[in-house]
Image (cartoon, rainbow, N blue to C red; front, side, top):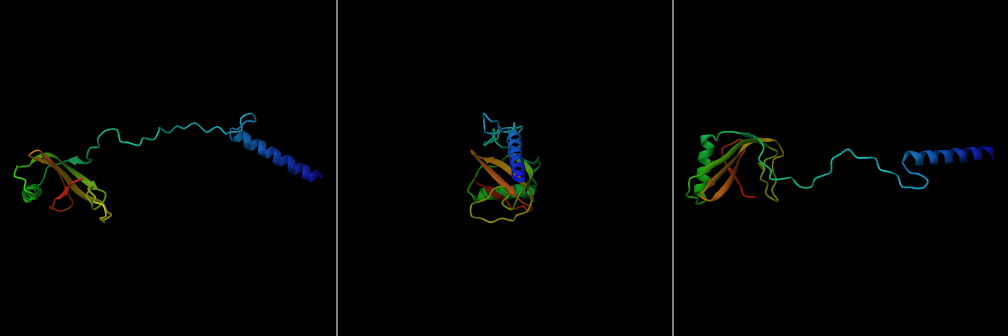
Length: 137
């Protein structure tokens, strides 16, 4: 009987200590959550996201490829450079993935070139070569 009473006392003591450690009290059995030091989670980006990378000059072969692509699309106006940025893309989509397409999963050093022709803006992406990819999204 004495062993049973000792075991029961030890169990009761353990329960009381556990209740104290969790922040619960006898009058309020719900534990108190610890204070958070983390800032609140934001679900939207505050403002537009600019392209990342380093401003650079457009090599002549790439500029000629842009002019030829615009011409093949029936654009008669001469393109004007808005921005040219050296970028490391996260995969072979060059930052302009199309649904249902598969891309190389490797970092690709390339370039993003934005031009205007007439009243439209065109966003071109280059990988390691001089063949432009028009991003239409």
